[in-house]
Length: 344
Ligand code: DOR
Ligand code: ZN
Image 1 (tube, rainbow, N blue to C red):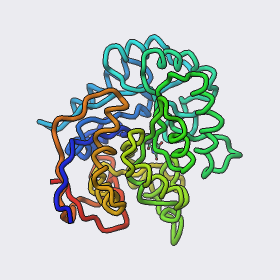
Image 2 (cartoon, rainbow, N blue to C red; image 1 turned 30 degrees about the vertical axis):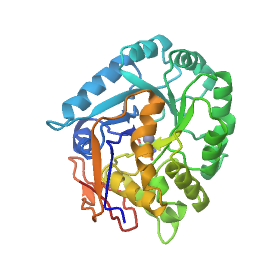
Image 3 (spheres, rainbow, N blue to C red; image 1 turned 90 degrees about the horizontal axis):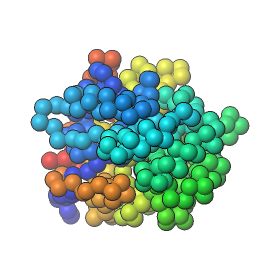
Image 4 (cartoon, protein in one colour; image 1 turned 180 degrees about the vertical axis):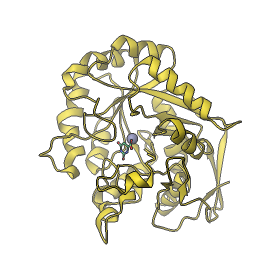
């Protein structure tokens, strides 16, 4: 049995760091294992301009522990008022690596997102021209669409039309949760990729709802049926270059998770690499963990692979059940299975 596994240092292609005290509390959880992360812009107020992104990047760098080797890869939050020239300037300056599309109302702090997709056509055209990826939160928000169908409907009604209107646009389908999304990526080899979270490889909707409601497993897009989880596991562990890790690690205090209307998000920054090693070992695909966590993302984003490495050893990991923050504890994702791999 394999006892150690050394891979190029991984990156997280979808991460929520928040701001202020929360940023300082959660950043060390990511920067000890990951070299880079695509930083989500859904702050309050959101990161909508080049100036916002530069200021946020500086606050992240300022919050890094001494000696940390971590590069935040900034994104802009797409609104119907986004200026294509501001996006192009931020990209040309090397500041931003993607623009994030939230359908208005789809998730945490998405109120400033897009309602009328025609109103962002010029920005998307500019992004296609300059090779700047669009990261999509792929759910429609229509009240008459069942929450478990919102990703599949988004692909048909929103994503596919956008890609047909802008065939050169690079698109990352973020945190995919369905076999429909896996199939769509597989059927569209040009300019398309998808991130998969740690938690969606582990939980299905029973984990959230059977035997009592588990708020810490509630995230968006919500976990679906088992057949979808299995499709995600097959895609993630396949080694296919179009699928890569985006944890969507999203810190909320326990207080906010446990409200009558609790927040969406799973906090996986702390134990993601242990969980992934477990999942890949279960799928007899440890050899493909490096592709998923360390190689496929930089290839899609046109960035170099990390020179440094990360070593996993076959030992029970020791990690806290929650992270203390000045706002209150943040519960670390419970994988609901024994873990056998630790980061050395
Ligand atoms: O579960 C989620 N949490 N999904 C998202 O899309 C946003 C995120 C957050 O910001 O908390
Ligand atoms: Zn997210």
